[in-house]
Length: 240
Image 1 (tube, rainbow, N blue to C red):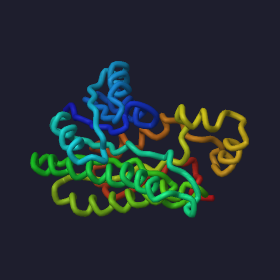
Image 2 (cartoon, rainbow, N blue to C red):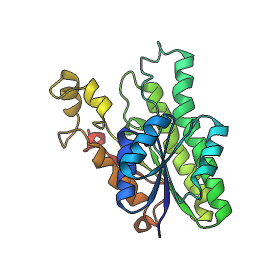
Image 3 (tube, rainbow, N blue to C red):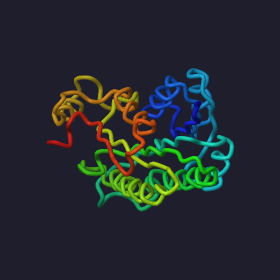
């Protein structure tokens, strides 16, 4: 059976790695991204479909989910981490922006796809990409980490509510992942990268390819009795 897998924020970074992994499995992958040009380029490279969506806008979400067709697997990956700063310095507008994308956006996508899955009556799987920051705080990332904690709570609530419809909801919580953006912010050998790596028992930051297998598994039939769970992919950082 060829499934339709909708990956938000799939044009780059972790999202592109997720899209690549699901496509390699033989699924029909739809890359959904706010940057339509980037989504189109990624879809050409990977042989996937693509569409433009603003996950924080209900109308845009409804249109995108309709265009994607019947969705078997939703991967809520799109998110914003650029809003940083100490909580006492964070502006309400910046706080609202990260909440709007990370939490509201995940809620809107989950709601729209779940409604479609329930109407079809064939079940489905939803995988939310969160962060170990939901459980282990880092200075100046309070707004971002609060939204990821909220998505972890949403994962459990939706897993409970959707179970009767055969829809499983789980999350993958990575530690720091060496996306192109992070590589630029923390070059090899930089003090910031060395300091962060020292927090990780396995002594390295995750590659994008380290995150995807957990999401692929949670969306697979092999995980048919797993719902409401969160798998950390952090090299053991939460143990410290």
